[in-house]
Every structure is written in C-alpha cells, then in structure tokens.
Length: 481
Ligand SMILES: *Cc1c(COP(=O)(O)O)cnc(C)c1O
Image (cartoon, rainbow, N blue to C red; front, side, top):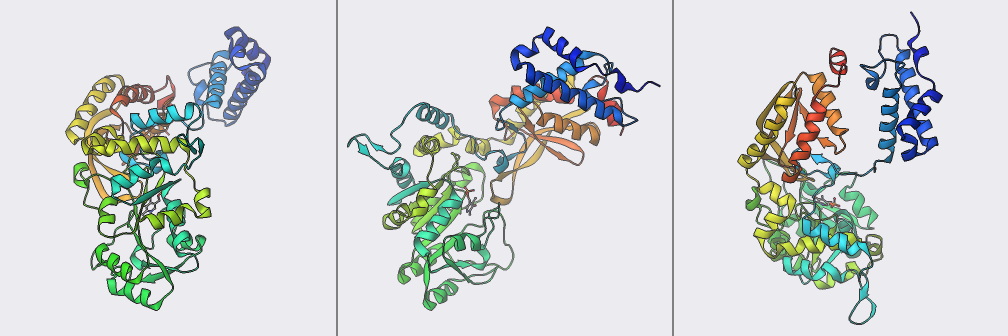
C-alpha cells in the first residue's frame, strides 16, 4: 500500500490555495507559510504511527485535500493571536476561584476602572492644593467609615498587607501567635516565612487544638513581643477538643501589655454572613469593635472587589505602616483603587451590595432560581446533543481559601455519555472561544450555574452545543479507545 504521507499536498500548493482564499491578506505571507508547514508536520507526524488515519482535524477528509490544511493553518494563526489572559465561564461552582481570578467585579467597579485608566487621573495629585498628593488618600476614608476604624490603608494584596504589618510593628521582635493558626495560605505563603521575611520572629503559644489567653499572657510577660497576631483559619478547620482565646480577651491583654493586636481576617466579608447563607464569622467592623488594633483583609475575596489588601484600625499604627519602605513595594495600582472605591460605595446599603456585587449576588441566589436557569439551558441544548443532559442539584464552594468544608447548595447540569467522551467534551469546552471550565466527577460532566453570571447563559448554550456535538467521523473512532 502507498505511504499516505506521499499524498500530503506540497507547501507551495497549499500556499497557492491559501492565497486564493485570502489567508495571506489577514496574516501576511510568512506567518501563513509557517502555519501551513506546522499543519503539514502535524499530519506527517500523526500518519507516521501505523494505525492512525491522521490528526483529528483531517478526519473525514482525504489526505490530499488542501481544505483541512488551510482550516488547520487558520486555526493555528487565530490561536496565536488570541490574548493569553481572557474571560472564561466559571461552571465549577467555586465562587472565589483563585485560579479563575477570584471575585468578578460589579458593573460600577468596571466602569470606574475604565474611566480612570482611559487617561490621566489624580492618583497622587492634590487637586485643591495643586501639588503632589498621596495615592493612599483615595479609599482610606471609605474603608475607615465602613469598618468604624480611625484610619485605613490599601496595598496590593492581603498577603502583602500582613507582611507589611509584621515588618512595621514587630521588626527585630517577636509576634505572638497560636500554634493553631500557623497557616499556609497557599502559594507557599506560610506564617513563619512571612514573619522571617518581615524581620520578625514568631513566638508560638498554646497547642494546635487549644490556646488560652494565659498562653499569650505568658509570652508577653517573657518579653520581646512586638505584636499579637490572630489569623483567621481560612482554609482549614480544627474540630473536636478545641479552645481559642476570645478576641475581646486578647484585646484587653494586648492593651495592658502595650502591644498591638493584629487580626488577619482574610475574607473581608462586610455584610451579615447569614444574608449570603454563610456561617457566622466576624466582619472587619466587628473585629475592630471587639478590640483588634488593626484588621487586615482581601479586596477580592468576599468583599467582592479587585485584588487588594486592606488594613484598617488605629491611626498611629496605620501611619507606621504607611511610612514603612515595604509600603512602596506593595503599592496599589490605580485601576484597582478605582474598582475598590466603586465597590466600597455599594456597601452604603447592604441590599445594594448584595444585589450589585457579583460574588455576593451569586451566593444569595436560591437553588430554585439556579434550577430554573439550568432547565432553560438544558431545553436549548439537550435536543441538539447526544448523551444524557439532566438538571441536578450539586454542591459548590465559596473558595479563595474561605469557609473551608462549607458546601454551598447549588444546581446545574450533568452530562453523561461515557467517560472518554465526557473527558473530551470537557477539554473541548475549555478550548471554546469563550472557554468553559466545569468539573468531571464519576465520569459525568458537571456544570454549576451558581458561578455563571445570568447574562452568560446564552454563551454557555452556544459553547455546550459546539462542544458536545461530535465532530463528523471523529468521535466514535477515538471514543472506542
Ligand atoms: C487569603 C488570605 C490571605 C491572603 O490574601 P491575598 O488577597 O490572597 O493576598 C491572608 N490571610 C488569610 C487569613 C487569608 O485567608
């Protein structure tokens, strides 16, 4: 039998065919030639394995037909021109998915960001005095008002804010911390390393499961303590025989000893957790009211804004942080400041915040509402795709290292058609022009509607139809394997 590779069209012939279709007009001769050579190489490579009919993109066509090569070349050229960072549909049910960019921004925040970054802005310019100002004035008043703090500071992210606080308050001394709060936040951001980077030592007190006020008191009496640190156990839980020192008692102890109490809250939820179906945890305002001297929290977790680290509390401590050299290294960007200010303004009314801030609105959506949307999507998709597409209830997560072990009851779609096809469909969904990221569990594709914005439902329908319909000739051949 003739080697099928001998039938691959020549690059010259393919270039002529591409020119007739106008491919070179869009991408230029050299790039088209490179893409065609790549397509030819892919085909040659696939045909070298004895038992294959060629690459997926050739299935159903003849090896000497130029069309599939041109389509493949066009696809390669378009892929190369696609931005690296682009929007995706989050069908994972994880609301603050760190890998998918955490909190989606409110329309108000997006508008403010676009307006401020379109030209110049008074980022560090005092318009009244006509002279240099400080970028740190922009959100400080709002954060202070919303948390009941004397003053506030916004930096690049929460991990940075913590390093800044430890460095400014406890450099050359120790930070007292419970052994039950020696957390790793992720990305190798661990308390001991953070303190070491900040030039502070850690004085571990208590035991992993139980720490009492007396443990902190003993550490303070022994001397050399620059700050007491309470870290929210964001991403894990300790259950069973446990005890931790009440914040108010720690605050009293810190005041007597004359050392600041710093509370790293992580999530930054600023509404009553019950309103979004979450278990009780202190808001920044409550932590300050109970006596923390500084609270530290993220801008893009449950606050629902851009990436930022917020610090609020005693004016003298905030001033020390602001004048630390590390503050300059962690400075917040003007786009983030604009988005943060607009997001914070929505907190003037909790109802407004719940309705307008996507992360909160997603959490506040009822399972019934999600089921209704899932049914509409299923009705549009099911008649056009093979396999079984059902509307089911499922469990999502808050994510972003917050509320560990807390399942968010949710609803969405479940598609089954054999594990191999399900895996291939999941990959095709990720390769969509607007990629869709779902979950594969027990051989089924799960798409959680809670984290899809309602105006993205039509895009989800289009992506599902395109990804779940088998390619002509291709699917069953490879699905058999
Ligand atoms: C998430 C988290 C951080 C880090 O916040 P980033 O915004 O990711 O920098 C710090 N501390 C706690 C307790 C957290 O949960």
